[in-house]
Image (cartoon, rainbow, N blue to C red):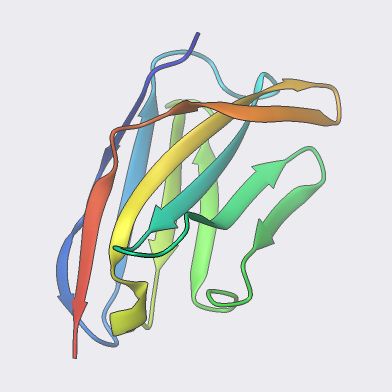
Length: 120
């Protein structure tokens, strides 16, 4: 079982950058599929980026602005966010799902979340 701890959230002006980190308690490469989700007040949770056997995927709303990356030596997942917009304001969560080869199972492991606030 993996434990996830996010960090790096905060307040930023629109157009600015921010980098989120997610430290995993165990080895994640080849073992877990990883993703970033976000949830704004009154809205459904949205998967913004994920990484798995086939590569990376992004929500349309963040394509070209956000980049997900993984440092396997540090067991850490990152979300590099650029050109932030007020609508990116949300609590961001790191999630992990068991992986078997190219198959990703449900994201059953979650961090506590980190708040990102973008002001105009």
